[in-house]
Image (tube, rainbow over all chains, first blue to last red; front, side, top):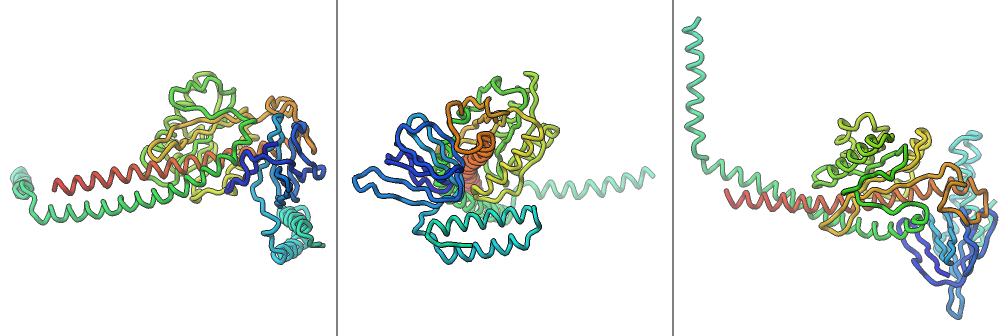
Length: 138
Length: 278
């Protein structure tokens, strides 16, 4: 199947032939292989896994904070995100620090305010990022 | 009284006669001064040209990356079309037009071409009995279209920071979506300069129809959804809009830099000719 995976400032894959893509959708992770039924999914913060075709079948893991994945009839999948980062490039200390800052902001923000919603999103995203690299944040 | 007025007019005539004698041949000093000031202008335009050329390099790269980022949306919208010779007859009843212009001037014809295309589009729509409004992006467009199309302009986005980023496009699109929903429009029409190469750009218009409810979205028939269909499609269209605006903004930016480069090149050449003739 063909994968197009792009960010506004970087095209990660364009027309790449891969074996499978595991996408963190709203209802959980789902895998897409060739001839998958066309589907549209809003991405949740989580890990996007790309399994390559060659013999070794190596898996590339990216953390995505959001975006959309569209699988079309011709076995082409478009994944588009404002930002994505390779798991290896994530700094665990930065993630814990950001999580703690967001947690404090969430606690001190007014209930139901925009600030609280933003803090909550930060918390959830950082928590998912932590989980992706094996860091448990509470 | 007549005698004194005669004396006054005689006094006034005298310096005029003196000035005429002085104006005959320019002195060497005057020529020298003119050469210096023209040389300075030439230095400025030449450096503006080089700055524009450098910015263009960056813009070209950004545009090249923005294009694949936007290709996934081709399944959800029309192809962009040329503004030249366009009749605009396929546009729906109520349109929100978003022209992309620059913040600063001295960039050749980019902004006037957009203003012209926008005016033509508005006229075509009104002649067809349709309705439209405008959200202008860029200070130059706002000032150019303020008088002829003033009553059609809903709001404008000026002071946009260069270079654009996706975050910028997202906030722009949030504004546009707000106007779109409030005005109950049928479609958006982006009018922007499409960058072809450092010497050429064309005006294009891009129609994006937002389906009123999910069953209308003819592009989306046959797709499953793993979440709530309405919510997902709604959000996806907003994201697509940001993505599309990002692309248009990058395209317009590259065209602006290339046009500025050409304009400054001409100005430098003209200044050089002026110096040579002095």
